[in-house]
Length: 413
Image (tube, rainbow, N blue to C red; front, side, top):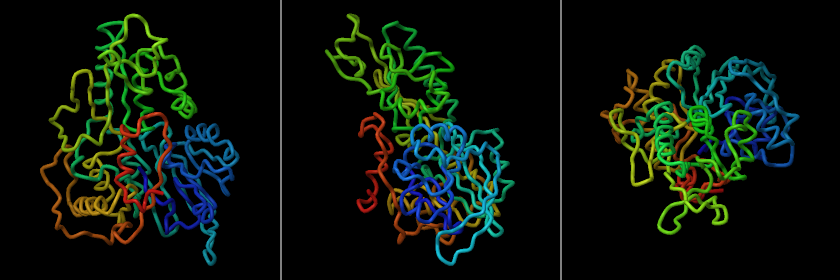
């Protein structure tokens, strides 16, 4: 969950992924990396943004529907598009300046982008949330831009999460678990127990493309997701479909059944439910040689992540050397998390070779000297964080909620 405060000191007059009154007072141009709730705080306010909102075309469709008050401010940028803006900082004494902005695919969810900002003196990359796939070509593009400052998705900047399977591998396993179960008996059903209130859009699309099975979600879940054009054919309110990502399961008569199906809707031959739990937070210590799924009765856990693993982050940062001089963390849950991540980051920046994917044999020395001059967050800084909207998942089952409740009370606004 993002704890980025929304502003970059070197770029006065713009705000990114946070749109509350403080940011609005400081900015004349706004940027949205993707349409997940922890990156849209403040867009729910009735007052229209005081400047243009730059975002991807997919995100533009979503924002125009969910927050129509801001529709006149939407300015879409295609992947790879570059625009030059004149920025007028709100702070007295700050002079206007020219800012060049480039949009780069982030591969976190439909429409997600990174932003590369360049002035006459600074080159800054804001990653938002990301997980780049191998062979996509984004890394070579980013390397050619030679960013000096990187605002990094640090969700899994922790060597406990050194390796994740690719999303293709994870999706293939989930599809296989769905297919084999549904093929056994026409009464069988699958319940997808999602780890967070958003972030499963690509998984929904992949399941539908490979199985041609629509997925039932609750009305509260469907309302925002249907603004993604690609999902309109994938999600349904029909409770009779065979794959569900709604309210989960309930125990009735000693057996599990779909909670969305009331007794009045059940057939005489009750369905048997296999629950699949795609998640990342529980998969500490996973290596490339380990199985990335676990079975317990009819409950299957599968490692699935839309965020880069620690080794992927290391490879990403190594590609940016020697030009990068500051790495600033976008996700910090508490002071202990800050310490662990600064140690891990210092190890990566001081390492002369990229970390081998899936190799966790080189743990970070907790007494290592920290290059804190490279980091924006220090212990004396306050990290801001807000709660996120609920789209139907239970509080206990949400990884976002788990990360939120790990925050110090002073940060839970």
